[in-house]
Image 1 (cartoon, rainbow, N blue to C red):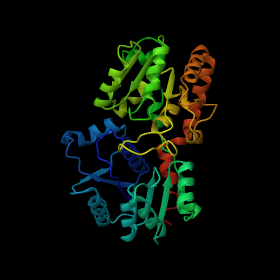
Image 2: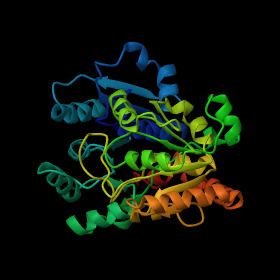
Image 3: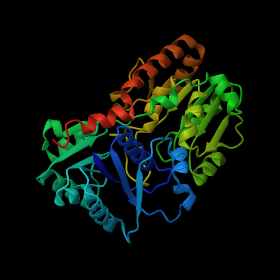
Image 4: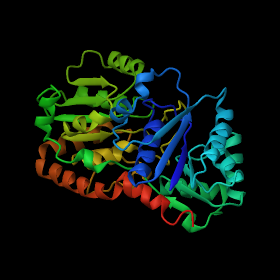
Length: 376
């Protein structure tokens, strides 16, 4: 099929929504579809960063697809301009993340898939969702968690046919996590401390548990705590707050292509989310409906996982592939980490199960499930 995707995320950028859109479009291309991704112009990005080779390393993707950067005077006008451009390409399918573009796609007569990661917000978000819900046309909606589907049903009614609502958690490129080195070897390749190691990856936004991460490092001086990711200002802020603790490392941003090696360096991978989780756009709370990409990368890494005990994480993780801790009880985290370091057999058991469970979460299978039978 000829598929046109529309994302409001800038490319390239390290925002999670940009990475997710590129991964999802890439999976469609890997299935053999002719894919064009339309995104807003990113004037801050050097021209060289838009070269496919650079994008491939930045996002950790391999199969090339078309990307069009659309100049628009405003975000709202982008939604319309992108649909008009999509229509001109005569696609078999429009795949949209922005609600307005999904609505406009239906109004232009395009079979449309809307991918949702959060409940509609503000005054206008609910309006657009109701519009999409009530419009006639060939349409499908995909949601990343059962919790999100439940939230939509509670607020807007169960208005979609079951076959037109697809549960599609985020995914992982399993092939990038094959034959990873053992933790000591990965640490040598990265010139890291030769010590038991806890790794977190991702941004340093509010609600990501960075304060807990630092406090644990203070209590467990024989363990190296490494955080791979974060924007320069955030990294500088947290380095300052951590002070001179010798067993804490903040690497700053790591291109997606290199991320598996950092995750492989861990004896334990950590997801210390708070009860409220900030998102890349700078606001909101995704703790109720979140499906972090790192969760699937952690599974594929084949390492023990320790994670905040939030209901939505139980949709993917369980007691056989992870250890759950209350977000706000540092003694529980310290005890659980120490127990894992004291019991290599348990750590390895969790790691094996994590790797096995990752097999069901490939981006390719996700894309295949979303497209299955659509358009009819």
